[in-house]
Length: 275
Image 1: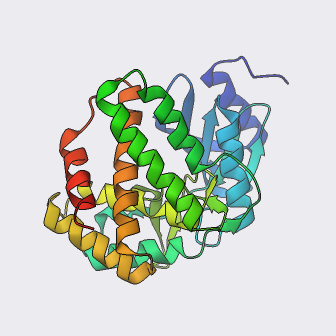
Image 2: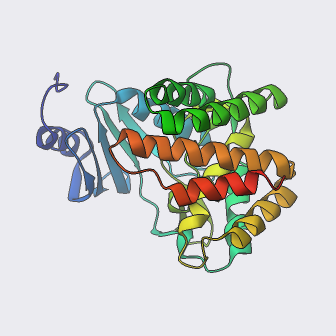
């Protein structure tokens, strides 16, 4: 059945039939993509993902399949033709953001970080992402200089660290979920390629949004220092990566029609100058 051109409802119905799903509830839904929780007769609690950008679903599936549920949710099946991905639903699924202790948040993050990276030879890279935002920013003068600087830091890291692995690409508090046994599992990997160090900065950026932290310079200095000490990566590199990620995230927001967060960008610049 060729369902590439059909609407979301028909895709959901196709998934229900294909995987014998029940109790399908919306987690997120948009014209182009959707995420749904459900129960499967074969797999139990599941997450169904639907996305017209099938390359992203395929990259996620391949990374999860290779990890086989170790430190991640399990990938059960992928329908490339329809743009459907079926995954394990983590129970209870409490996000790491709810953890009050910064030291515990970093401990959990680094446990996952140190175990999920798989060596690869090719694929879309983190550097490709930075090159794309540089092209976009040529018509946005306010962001062009920042994007160029962020790109230069990415080039530097790709030159300094020779490892090439499948990266999560969005490894932060809301993509690390608690299991019933007290361990955490990651979800929603992007499967982008680069040195492992590139998976550090998104976590740092999201420390600005935790309910337990004041998003100020002192807190972010502590985050950077602890991550550097415990990961073994030089503090100067961690600061550059935080600047890079802050610019990348804000340019993506601008592409989506949102305002750039100049408070975040100014803080990233201040922290960079402390190296």
